Image (cartoon, rainbow, N blue to C red):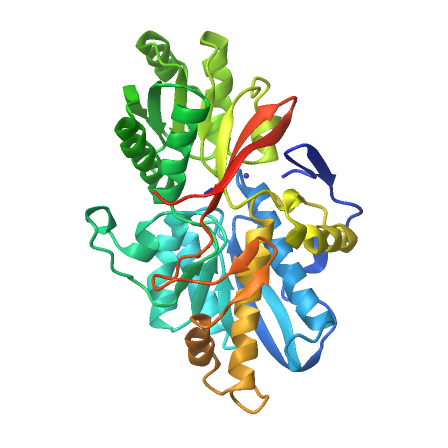
Length: 407
């Protein structure tokens, strides 16, 4: 899942947010001029400070843009949308506190976020108990929608209020393994994870598919995500004869791990969407050749995203939309669409039991979004399983392969 930057580099295109705002984008509970008389609030939970703030601020801004657009276009007549962004600091305990704040604000009908699967684990139950819809644009931990026994085929949805526009680590890890084995032609890998739910789950999924394909895991290790000195594990990697390292974790640790690795042995580091950030390259002087997978197709390559990109630039956000901008816009818009359905079924007015009616409407939500067609299956998972592999080339993330993947 997985971090502040004013420039987003994806594929062959570099996007620099134009202009800035005097008060940090003015998105704290104020999403533009109203389009109606009833105010509806959409909560946004993400790391707005700390190591992962680049991704979190992109999430906040993209949700803000969706609300502003809905107000401007009068998507739901009589309704004014506002966002309430809260900083979870990428900490599960803070995320749980934020969930309580959203629940206590009776105007909140849905929550977008969080970034981290581990944070989501602390938020799911209280939001579910309150009947408050949650849509994450970034969580990939498979167990969040399919239960702890999904690996055995016993898939059970734990929380009816939880949805996501990002596909699962089951799909992402398998896609990564297939790309490294078949496309990069690498057969010997050293496996490292940061012991967090996202990183450990992603590494396990990668390992299962990579070994099934005939690849060999020549060694494995765990690291502390707060560490920045990885010389001990780098020594083990060098002795193993590995041709690549697969890292289940996020870029604040992944970047120095990669740089220290290349100080000793010239092999690439591969990771998941928690690595796919411009800040990974900014923090790593030796990122050339490193590989990451991320959910969806690069928005810069999608006709469906042209308006989103243009509107984001025009809005003048200081921070780039980063890896989850398009998915966040779609996650926010799915709640807006659910509100639209609930209002339409209540003679054009927001129902008194708005949270319950919005939740009921989520299963009916279906629209063409920034990232492509948006809808949810019986588990609350996105029906869009598009994945993309990227490689650092000349200081930029360049897309190498995109495909709808089914493990």
